[in-house]
Length: 295
Image (tube, rainbow, N blue to C red):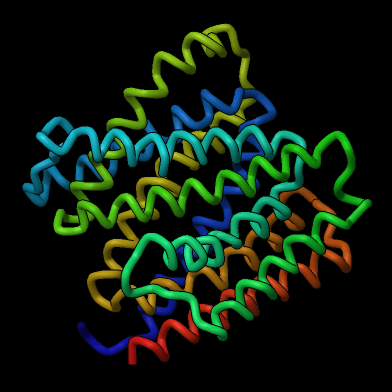
């Protein structure tokens, strides 16, 4: 692994921007498309660059191998369910709030890893970080300007969706010996297969008359926020390691709030700022404790 260069920080920032931009693009996509169709097309378009990479690098895709059940399960849990829940929730919730709610993923991962892994146990420092981070999330729900009885359930769905990302990540550890590109291509393929009939049956997308901006956002979500973002993540992991790549968690909610304000003119209340700071501090404490334990 080589030493960190300015280019690496630039690429990490680009990755954070791409992932953060997913939230306002999901919002725009919901103007014309249903959540099942958004999830399906996002996965479909995301699969294209990953499959092409595997083809050019001659990496065997094992989606239909003896491990197909693992790939299908991870595809459903790590892609299908969270993509649907987030798209459904963002219909009634500001995209910048979704960015903050999804930022709880590292905190949830730390809590669940204590029970389902051998080397990621919670200590006092991590407990403090989790407490601060989730206190910020709870405080966010007290914002009566942004949350009401009509959208509070949607916000909880987004938060629930973040839990499925974590569970999917834990399942991926079971096939950690396989190449990242192969795993990603395989779960994207299965996610596409699972969602195709479901989205066609429930939402009949052929009856839609979508807006141009919604269609552009949906294509962007698939190719950039899903496919290219994962490839960029692979590059950073390979050259700089997991610890460096994990720093993206600090940037995503910040960029998500800023982009929501700039692109969609979404409100940024004092409680949003306080919640955002609390979540970032919580993530920093948790990750800092993890680094110390591994040192």
